[in-house]
Length: 427
Ligand code: EPZ
Image 1: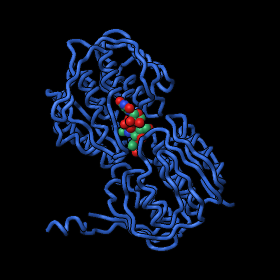
Image 2: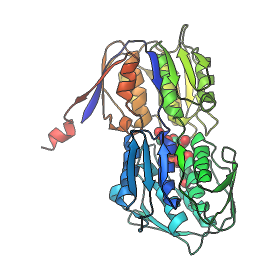
Image 3: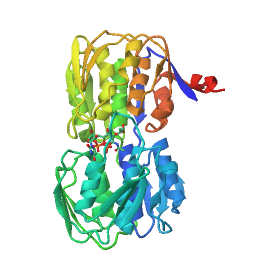
Image 4: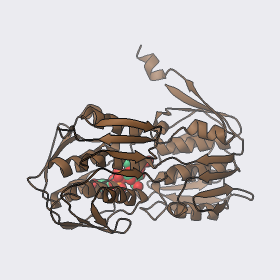
């Protein structure tokens, strides 16, 4: 196994280039199943979650040609069997997008229940509700979800909650259904708009993505296309917080500032200076970091995927801050790790009360999940000693070359191989 060793206390400085958005890529790549012809996808982040999706497609029979480090040509014509077994799907949550994409192409799909980060119960009832409105029935047996329909027919329905995954899955299933589908109370995240743009570039007829009503007029066929994925808003936000936590001064390139609005607003409230340009932003700190309150919400609210990072920053601010998790049941598990570094955080259910302590002390810590892992790196970078972070495979699921990018900003971070105690005790 590998861990990060960080000698913190260095203010980050210089430039960093943001990669393509993970959560757009993991939807767009399975969406190629719907195309009758090869798709060239550019700006694909080189991360573990994407490799898993590509591997699933390839094992299903798709032809994948690597064009450059971040672009692929994908031809799914040879996929004959709409099945994604457990061994392939178990590693990541987004494998459920194969349900919508395969259902849209074959009128049936059989996909193992998804894995991914553990934030408590992660139901898929809304995905199944959407499929049902399109005329599909489902069964769940031995962990496999099977959806099928004689013919998908568009209809109008309302999601009971705002869900990114179900909005995307139903878009995938509906794009070739007969007639018009209207999704009400749809999620509005930038990656939903990106998926709609991708599908439209293949000949789909989707309107309203980015608002809470998405209208999809079914088309008979979708053709191949060339498409470039949007920059990752959460990766950008993570570097913004890392710059602030180290009292650095960095230029973050290849971003869409509009996608960062809620993060920019909150960070300015905390006292961080941010200059916005067309496709880059400068983040620096000159004064004191201030307390604030943050509530995570679906887009355009403050993203839940930035919650651990901002909580870590607030440990360094002056005064008492409150962070409320408005999306997931249980996303504060990482707080114990921050406490090991001296943080003063009280958690009651979905609310964390943070007493700013100015500085975190180095300690051995763990990455509990992807974004919590990013927060641990930020904590390590901000403290003045040597921090060791175990279980970093979570971080590599979603951040392209994070060590190299941080080293490019002057951070002292390296990876080291270690033998896990659980492994030793099993010998
Ligand atoms: C996506 O997960 C992201 N993952 C998550 O990012 C992100 O945290 C989340 O959206 C919210 O923004 C991907 O895009 C691959 P949801 P998703 O459906 O689609 C409940 C990261 O770190 N719900 O919007 O699974 C659910 O329990 C990851 O990059 C139902 O009740 O999230 C949650 O409370 C982690 N029934 C809320 O809705 C359902 O059928 C939002 O979930 C579906 C969801």
